Length: 297
Image (cartoon, rainbow, N blue to C red; front, side, top):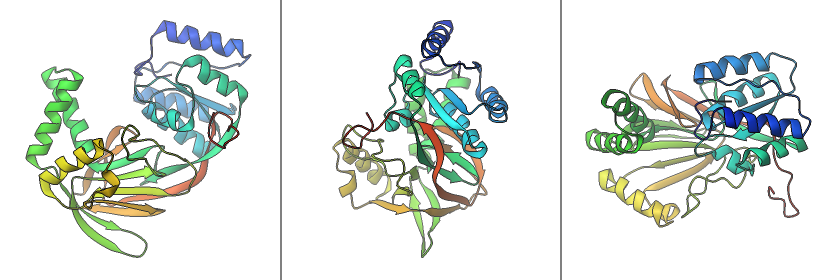
């Protein structure tokens, strides 16, 4: 479990998790990590053990770390959502309360879902370059150096990035063609994302075997503002400036040798070009049983 997770409540959370595991007669070794590096080392040790199931308690970043080890070591992933947004758990239909999530784990219904990969690194939700990762990096500077709160730092960071240079020039190479765009962002999702009012960021499926590629290809700063307005009013897919593609792999090349890249909400510096591909059905995860309509219960 990530001790710094958005909804981790210290000893009380740990007590509830232990009680719920015991209630379902589940025998588990519990480790609480203080930061991302510790999460990775604990996950490495668990993945190399004889444990069949690795349970990640935390947000999407924590789940990403453990899921990558599960994929590479043939383990099954269990999830206890303890983050702020919990996108992956929501898309799987996993309850967001501890008791409900552990009940799903106890039922042990597994399914195979896709993962994305960029330069050998796995992502379960999405990856992007451009505005979002640059704002996240700037926000951290505002928080750490200037002591600002999360929201004021985020607003200040967004304003600074937007005023300075909100665009990135990128060569996009697909299997049959390539083109250059000057765009505020390129977003690559593991499967297709909804882009409608009240449902921005949800995915109807996680096993379609495709990446979704989204980018704004013209319009300048005013185009970025209009994009945000159209997103709010659910007209994003009708925007002529907004382009979407369903793909299995794509290469992004920037003029910089290293590019700030967002992976499941975390930012890292990666070498350009960025080689993206889908890995269909490579993650085995415990999820709710389908209901009679074929959707997650």
